[in-house]
Length: 122
Image (cartoon, rainbow, N blue to C red; front, side, top):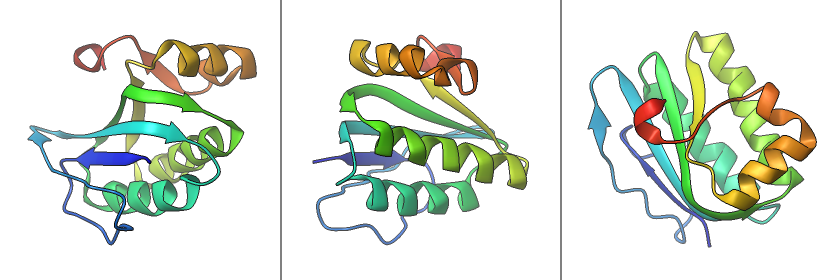
């Protein structure tokens, strides 16, 4: 199960996703949890696109509670980064778990996506 937390207004999200909100001045933080895989990818994509529509100039994805990810989950992050750029929004990843950080390094996506060790640094 993947859960999303965001400061943006709630988008239509499947029942297994619970997005309690929190907002920070000038930016939106979306805290992801669980597994970012092919099963979670459609709901994740829909939710993050909705968050982009309501975000400030900076969208931070807090990955600290993400236990694992696969290429489908990473593909969503790349797609959201491209959409964000088109809207003039900067996307940053924060606090990836060890497995997710290793996957970002192994795929080379750590050089494409801006990754910070902690949310506060993003």
